[in-house]
Image (cartoon, rainbow, N blue to C red):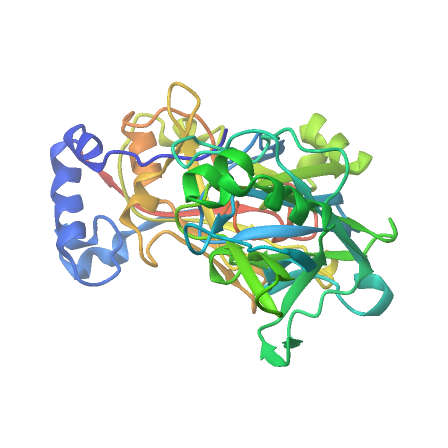
Length: 442
């Protein structure tokens, strides 16, 4: 489980030496984006700053275990065959609830059709012609789901072996509106559902009297995808907002009326979570197992996928007992633009660390928030730049233990980005750390 928690800034400041506490206080109160330390000296002294940029850096690649993926702002669905990484899959589980209580299907109930509706928002990958072909299937969930329970992205629930319905192989039309009963509607996937489910609803009419009764009888649905071909480059991950129109529609008639419809929807009260599956190429597995390979190339990936570890092994040796005040510290992470292809890089990455228990936590720079920590993709220079002045100062003053730094994809549970990175010792363009500093009296 790889969610990271906040580093308590109060405890961080409490351990700072006096001179640095003054700098941090000025830094916190400043309305501009500061360089730690510059606020406590005469601007004319800036010319006395020293610069260091020849630090040893080590990079290694890790698999994430899982991330919490329940009740988030978006869900993902789809499959694609990444030319660099391998086969990527996203599926989801969700409860459905009736829009009204005391549903009465009436005498002479006759189902006409049943459809699982899933609105689109966007995609990552290829949805053009044959390359975009995927088959989407919906299954009945056999285990209770609850919003009170925490669900992680490697969790699976028991489902019926036989699908309730499938689309066959289709190309998702994420930008095309559709006509439903003569009315234009938003872009959406429509999975036809076997009418045996409608008959099951009618045979258990007491389950339609309340939301509680219905969710006890019908636990929810599981929706998954598969690509038509395993050729690299095929498929896509779809971006969904289930609470904005996802539903199960039952069209029917009875002795009193034709063209009736009842809907079972996904709303804010429904438990739901996304599941991720990755089958990595052997080359990626080799990089994970052999840090020497990660020195040349590495990756960052969302969907609880991959992260890169950064180590600075000679930082304390460089300090050499000196009393150093760090004015600026930037970590440059270059992107291998030749391997991006159609898969856009992460718009933003986070740089996190670990606590003594090995759990991911925010660095003191990331705690600041806003634009200060950096991590936005620089498309002109093809790199990510992180401001880590607080982290470096904390390391030098033995406030922070050396637990490594980790390039963690931002929004890992709600987006499908991946980005190829040059390693710490790549001959073409390698990672680098640049520090501007002063030497103060001991």
